[in-house]
Image (tube, rainbow, N blue to C red; front, side, top):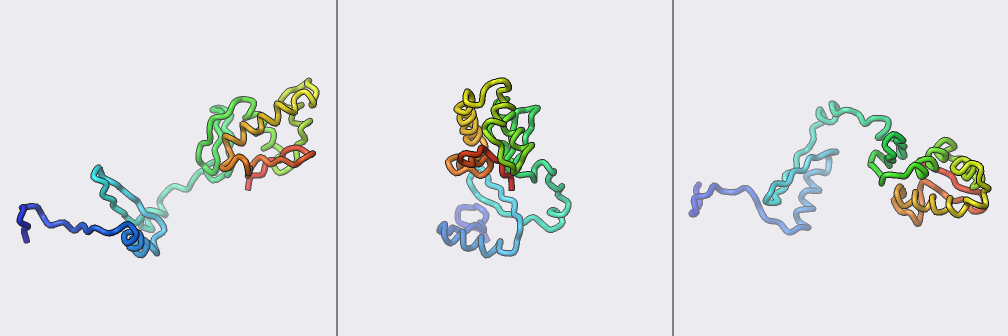
Length: 162
């Protein structure tokens, strides 16, 4: 069948966004993974990933599965496999110390002695508070409500990686 314009007939149909989303949801209900490609004209193609492709896909490395990974050689921190903003040497030192005592409460005095040896804790607690704030801004999904670096009022800080 030929069209009046001479172009080949198209199998594309136009749907309202809600209709399209509903249709895609029904089509993908029992599919665990799908590849999506979009061309220059913004046509979207969805392709289910077969079970064989899923099985042969290499498993994520242990590093990618960990919630918090510290990479001192590059001053990089990865959160759930995704890179966080690059940290300074001092921020990395703080995270490394907290990680070495993961789950334990680290007093401000203890952390000050590790980060600023020889300085009296009362001379560096303000700097430590600012350092923790900068670290949270770089690694926390919601810095005002930290998930990883927790403050225990009057006791210190604790790293929680779950």
